[in-house]
Image (cartoon, rainbow, N blue to C red):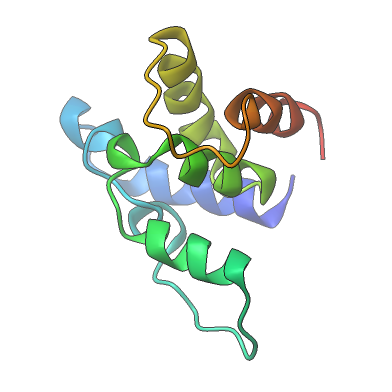
Length: 111
């Protein structure tokens, strides 16, 4: 089991199981811990950092695609991303048409 997946299981297992906190208001900070500032900077790092503290339900399609490609909290983000696709919830943030769909396919494959 990958470290991130094991960590997610431990964190979620120890969280109170109130239905509204399991998906509605949690952020990556709640799941993976606080953002740790790396020794370098890039556009990718800035995008991930900006999304880190947002409630998962408020992430844009582009933010979801970025985080899924980095395989952050996939088991939490994948259902949200799929719901956005199914609802055809287009917030015009994707860098290209089909970005979220491609990220979902990528994150759905074993690492």
